[in-house]
Length: 373
Image (cartoon, rainbow, N blue to C red; front, top):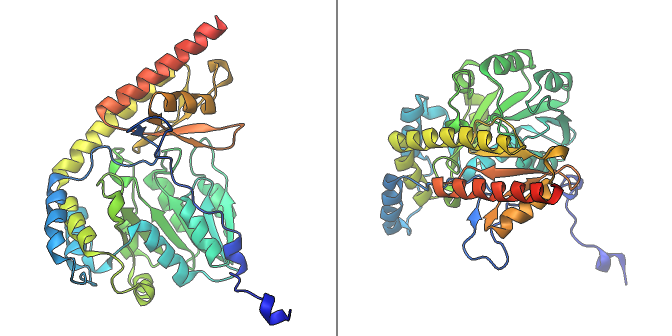
């Protein structure tokens, strides 16, 4: 057999370094319709106005969508007090992060991220054959000093999830200001605000003001979380002119589909609905943390629609055993970390779903007490 016969197409080296993304579980063997709290989805679903817009879009499926994304960009601009001309929409914020990475990162460059950054940021960087540099976090918070200490002449992009996942924590506006001020101008600071709409803290800064006042800040957002449009895959980014120009050169003409844009246009305008969800989420974050802490568990203070639970040695159980117990009760959490130090990330659900989670944990911890008693 000659050499030509045995050769086959091979991806470049960066692609082979990527571990495929694993999504949260959605099924429990033997249990019908379990409570799925593994993917940080909205338990409320889209607003009624968004559902009406989605139904109406069915009549236009034979037409290409508006490639300029005009209606949705204008709706986002009005709701968030932004400049519509600097907004671009995409197939989830994930695609927009990918487009920025493709446009500005080359083989041999460095992409800097915090320990718990959005996993797809790492995947997109490796796909460009770039080097991923990770800064450790301090006390479950992004460490600005650790990030800045790792900036080099090769750094092209710094991606920062704020709030972060899976911790649910955030760094305040002063920290963002200090980070940006110390970055060289050639480094893009990409602020991923997938959970920004859930934050109620006064000192939180999603970064929008930096976009038009500097040349190197991009803010990304999604309709998958508080807006409840995960299935439609629609997100948006706010970026300065030069970065937007580069992204527009490689963005496909119809990267955001018509029904998704129509639905998101209605969703972003329904601010009353979103405010109700935010208030309900804030209430349950406090209630859940207090109740689980009383059971001897450690819950990291979260500002998102999920919370991360740690299991101290003295509590008598582990995250993996707790996950199995919850699954037996028909509840699907998301284990994170290795088997030796696993934690549980759980989405804030509906009132009934949250009550079910708390009841399950009370049953589990009572069981542990009886075993050791």
